[in-house]
Each structure stands twice: as C-alpha cells, then as structure tokens.
Length: 168
Image (cartoon, rainbow, N blue to C red; front, top):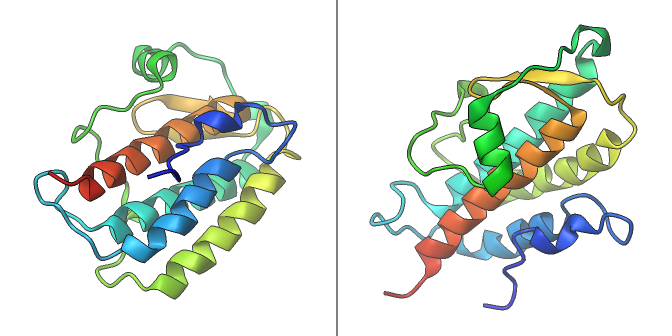
C-alpha cells in the first residue's frame, strides 16, 4: 500500500504543513473505517481515526487556552523513552474520556474533525512556545513537546490500522 507515510516524511516542515502526511493517511483510510481485526484491535479502524483526530483537536484547544507563564520544564522518563524511540507501547495507555469516540462513528464526523484538525495544526504554529497541557503519563508538555506527542500518537494509531488491514 503506497499511501503509508506515517508522517515520517513530514519532518521537513518548510515544504508542507505540520503532520500533512499523517492527515493525508487519515483521509485515505476513511474508506476502510468499518474494518476490524480482533487479533490486532478490539475496535474498528473508525475508532482509531476518530480518536486520533479528537486528540489533535483537544490538545490544540487546551494549548490555545493555556497560560504560558505556568509552564515549568520537568524531566519525565516515560516521555524521554517515547520521544527518543518515537514509540508508544500498545495496550498500556488509557485514553481520557474527552478523546474517546462515540459508539456510532459517522464518516461525516471523521471528515469534519479532519478539517478542524487541519486548521488547528496550522494555528498551532502561531501559539507561544510555552503554551502547555498536562499529559496523564508524560506530565506537562509545552508546544514543541506537544507537537512531538501528536506525531508519535498519530503514528501509533496509523500503525495499528496498518496491522488491521494487513492480510494474514
């Protein structure tokens, strides 16, 4: 499948927008939204798409409304591990309720969230470097750290989707 970019090619942000490759993958994958492979994931592809977009949009909103003056740089072993290897282990984390998809995920809802995510990721660039949010495992993240988390998190779910679609 030639569409798998996982956003790895979008490190050159001067040529295209932040996470454009990953958003392209999400848009492409909507056509497979109802596919499930319980050997890989208990939920369908739609769940992973919806969740990934909710995370992008929620983190943007929290960053935008945060107070940059309260950011304090702190060490996090879990964050350093994840950021160094660009990896989130499967089946360990638990998503907060605010980013959990509904039981019935509609294509139009995914498309709507995708457009909002495109706008939010563009807007993210204009925010102060010390806007921040509290991640339940990684602690307080500033804009740069949040952007790295968004890439790793979205890639994590795209890899799960790839495994769901892989023919066995």
